[in-house]
Length: 189
Image (spheres, rainbow, N blue to C red):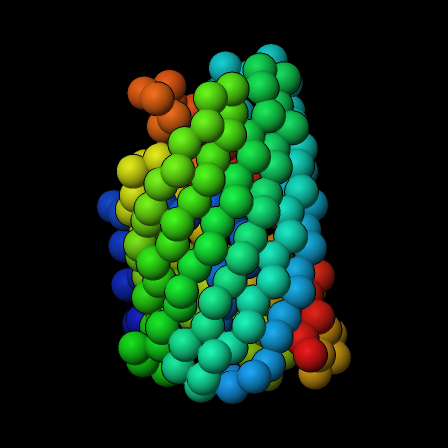
């Protein structure tokens, strides 16, 4: 059943749309928090001459066993202008392996724009220490976003993560895409 859900959500990613790249909230436990940092390497940004990099950080807090808030910041260092993305999301568990979210964003890439987005996060245990996840959504300033990745539980409160992310931004009708691999670490407390 878990493999069917993850496969269905991965297929949804092919047709879906938006949320910027930070590791999504998958597990929730009332009053716990998590901080994550990541490095985005070998990013392909449309209109850029080379391979770009970036970084991101997020803080999430579980309001209950079914809901959480997550603030994330990511920056892609592109030859043709950096992309800076702030986001605040409310995440709600609708099933043991499925969360939905709604978020507000502030994007800056030359011009700046406030926006909104919503979407779905699917997750499942692949082994006793590895959790796979897929994320897709839709929005007005980030037209399309896809994420597929895994988190490895190094210790009960520390995990390592890696994912592939794709984001298509539209700021004042100026479209730009960023895609590539992200890797990082998370600490729960």
